[in-house]
Amino acid sequence: MGITNNFYEVKNISFSYDGNEIFSDISFSIEKGDVLCILGPNGTGKTTLIKCLNGLHEIDSGEILIKGKNIKKLSFKEISRNIGYIPQNHTPSFPFKVIDVVLMGRAPYLNLIDSPRKKDMEIALNSLKTLGIDNLKDKEYTNLSGGEMQLVFLARILCQQPDILILDEPTSHLDFGNQIKLLEIIDNLAESGLSIIMSSHFPDHAFLSSNKVAIMKDGCFIDFGSPNEVITEENLKKAYSIDVKLIELENKRKVCVPLKTNFELSL
Amino acid sequence: MDNDSKDVISIILLIFLPLILFFTSFLLGRYPISPIDVINTILCPIFPQLEVSPTITTIVFEIRLPRILAAIVVGAALAMAGAAFQSIFKNPIVSPDLLGVSNGAGFGAALAILISGAGVVTQMFAFAFGIISVSVTYLISRAYKAGGILILVLSGVAISAFFSALISTIKFIADPDDKLPEIVYWLMGSLASITIDQLIMIIIPIIVGTIILLTLRWHMNLLAMGDEEAQSLGLNPTRLRLLIIAGCTLLTSAAVSVSGIIGWMGLIIPHMARMIVGPDNKILIPASLSFGASFLLLIDNISRAIISIEIPIGILTAIIGVPIFLYLLKRGYSEWA
Image (cartoon, rainbow over all chains, first blue to last red; front, side, top):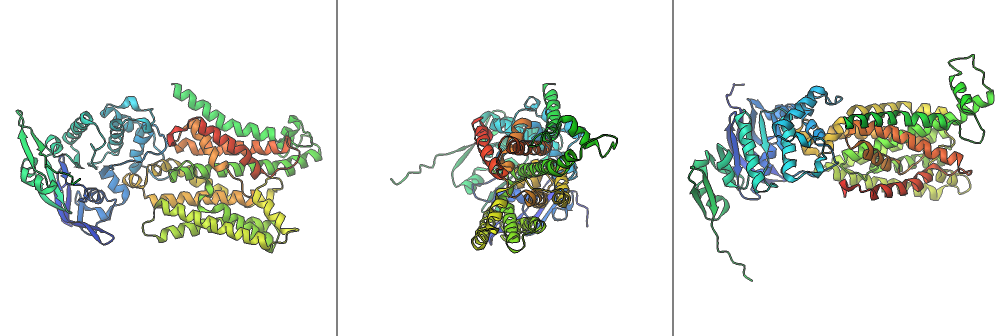
């Protein structure tokens, strides 16, 4: 097996479910500290792709390499030491304390017959402190706001001490302000050396925190590269079938403004 | 600091509650025995110099001890299995007979009573069919590609109904003068006539089941978050759930095989325990063990001491359990509203 320098590499992967192809021939790679944002319309297969990237679904063909190792050859435990994952939706269960939820992130390092020890507790408390939510420690996680809950899950995957975070629409349940806060946290985590793959519905978010962007449409990447290269009026039109105006603010930051389509219901 | 002292109180309560009930239970019954007699009798095999009357020895060791131990073992087993099932099925209104163990065991017992009538055979058939019905449920659910918890629960409902129909069939063909009342009485659940030999027969499944649930208890928390999250945290959710179901089935089948069907314990005890110690299974499973043992012992004591006619304990647990359950609902168990 040849040694690759790539941190996380995806080669020509395809996946189908019940005979329907969800996506095919997707390839990309990311390095340490990269933030990849996957954009694309509803139902294009972003969530399915994400679940393949972290090994929850098994791909039909192609390869996913984590630090040169094929994901198919790794156990769930080995994958979970490398990749932390936050799903798009969480169905709340029993009212566990926040600290108990965060402690679950230590499972990749524990045997089935073990439970967390003092050292694990310290790591869990540290990840709460990193995100500035140690005051929530003893609260029931089921009673938190959407923003707080997202931070608790983020604390849990930090507790997993992975190299790669895979986040499925991490901002989708957050209000305007919390979206930006979360993106800034993601930025910080990337600077500390974590690689992040996330999906989003907002092209603006890619300008804010990503250095790589993929646009997915009908099960393929139609473009992949830096935000400035990929997020163009032309590409957004292709992806979302609407006209979008890109505007540059004074500080060189770009924003996307969707234009009205003048669509009318035939009532 | 507050939390720590609360924990200490909970732990003391969890250890001493069943112990105190264990000793006081020997005092109850038609033949009055003083506390000192009880202590002397229990210590007698260790310190032979103590003098105890043979009548009291017989009552303590042959009549009261088996029944007290049975209440402890059956109560603890059902409550632990209930707590584990509620966690791994992400559902607080699940009880240990979800996958068909009770009706399977009931069918086994009814069949044994019909063709044999010997107590040992009844117990073995009940135990075996409890395990068989859960195995069938599990295998059916695996046959569906989509798998998942929902299919498992639905095949549990189906298998349960199937064995329930078989029980009715046996009742229908059983001799109404001797076999039928025996079957009906068994199905109602009772601790009245349990012997030490019967308890010895279930020691191994009870110990194995308890060890499985106690060792895996922290990881049950992860299953309660859903399979995808559990897997992303490095677990194989299907395999872990199978192990826990196996442990629960050993416990429930063993318990039901000596006591008959005792409802509500496996549903309300985990609830009470969760209200006191919280949902973390690391504490919840041992707490359910302790509360289950104490609660069934308490109910059995009530049936022995307060009510002069012997009511099958399966009926009492329902009569006492239902109002408690409704009270717990009213207390605003809002988390799963």
